[in-house]
Length: 329
Ligand SMILES: NC(=O)c1ccc[n+]([C@@H]2O[C@H](COP(=O)([O-])OP(=O)(O)OC[C@H]3O[C@@H](n4cnc5c(N)ncnc54)[C@H](OP(=O)(O)O)[C@@H]3O)[C@@H](O)[C@H]2O)c1
Image (cartoon, rainbow, N blue to C red; front, side, top):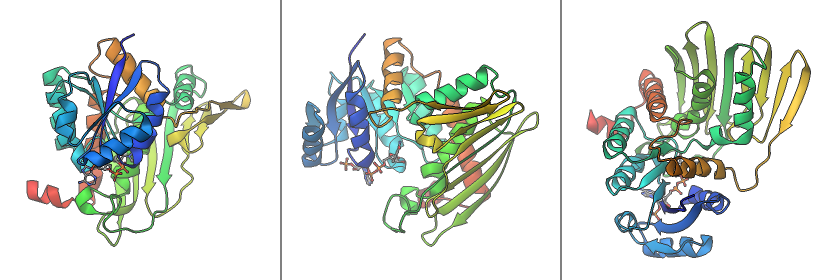
């Protein structure tokens, strides 16, 4: 197995959890940090056991020993960082939401395909053992034909107009920050996209959506209901209803257990993890790179693009455009 030397662009909040995951994966080497500020890079590298620290993202991607980069900047900066990595031949795992709109997602995907370099959206939830177990049960017919999914992810944050969650300039709002989790969950379960979406966004004082709700309609009478919020705590359940049973993943986005109910009664499966949960998506990238793949079969780029289009539709149907999109228009 080839040892994959990892770098991180944007050593902020979530990068810390990623560093924990890296240390838990055989074949993954914590190697280098790229920050806009050298002191920050050096401090993060020291704290988390990375060998190299760079004071710019350009210097990081010019390191010839670097194999793969985790892009962990706020979402409006994903595109620029991802293109920089791809242009230097570095494999990329890009934080969710992959991009702020489908236009950016399309650019990033086209570049990866053109350069034949690996690219994946860091939708870590679908690589968790509990979520994989749910999919295995569905595929084995444990709940019959799936007819409906409901999933929600909401939490109550204090309004901070300059913060990433609430600032329109940083593509704030519930839909992009956490709505991608239930949308991606439905897309995974149904292995396809809806042919109709009805939605509503509750716009707050800073001009971004504080609550997002959507109903998704799939062919052959299948449907889903999703909700996301940044000013409201929700139960964070993922519920899959089949014609012969149901599966419930409590706090589905970081699930460590699930409950199956069908004709045999109720059964609980515990599938805990111990390194924060990012270790499974990292393992997927390491495996793909070792197999010479440029895309993950479990999180394909066409699906990432379809999800970006669905989020565009929901935002545009509700007249939510970010300031940089008005400039683009
Ligand atoms: N998977 C998950 O569970 C999860 C959880 C939280 C967030 N996320 C996603 O991860 C991404 C980063 O979130 P975060 O909370 O870690 O963000 P953050 O701490 O606010 O920012 C991450 C880093 O990005 C760099 N950066 C580059 N340009 C920036 C700019 N214009 N403004 C602010 N920072 C900038 C900064 O590092 P330097 O200046 O040092 O380069 C900063 O430390 C987001 O897309 C978010 O949706 C994922």
